[in-house]
Length: 283
Image 1 (cartoon, rainbow, N blue to C red):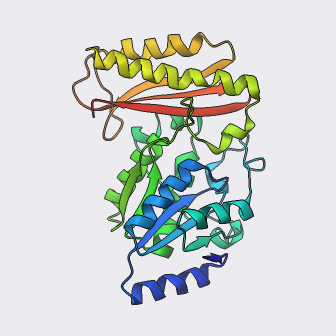
Image 2: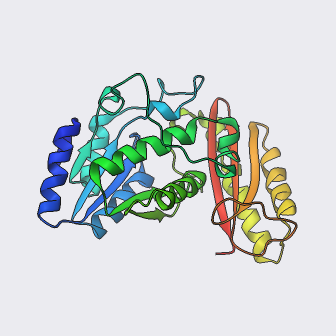
């Protein structure tokens, strides 16, 4: 496994792989790796000749009052986990390497897709995501790139970006990885104290309830969202940001009746920790 911190060195490694006709897979991460990340790396390793994992806490996707400085960083541990999961190259640059100038060039998806869900309260977040992923795609030109379904809105935004900008990269979207009790794996779970960790189980409980309602014939999206809200609101430590449902693909409004595949997504704070989760109905 090669640890690379410089853009030029990464480009040299990619050029050598291309010259050898190797297929390249990319797993973009912000570090603090957990089983969700390693499942992506495992899949990438199985499907490509060369697996590149980026470990970069991207400053441009954090708002001014968000946890950029506090975000967990554990490069040595992350490198070991990534290597064990099948990473061949780890790209872990300093912020100045990817953002060398104060004046920025941005890549931004516009429209309702970035104004709903997390985009409503984090208005600059997805611009930061699409900008950094574009930079990585240009540097690495991966055949496939791997993302988790837990970040469902990010997935839809990136699908639109790849389509609109004609990127030749295939996006591979992998299932949510959960703890044994159902809590979705997240780097921010480490912020939770014991009571908040237990309280956060209401997210999975509420989404499982949504799935059960749909399975038994419920097709009113408002009724499903209200049922989810009731489960989460019953937990005293929960502070709901949003509970919403949109059609897939593209996060379009649904109407009064569910006719196709939809996303039910939630964002809830427990203490100061904001967690997201989702379920897809109608697959």
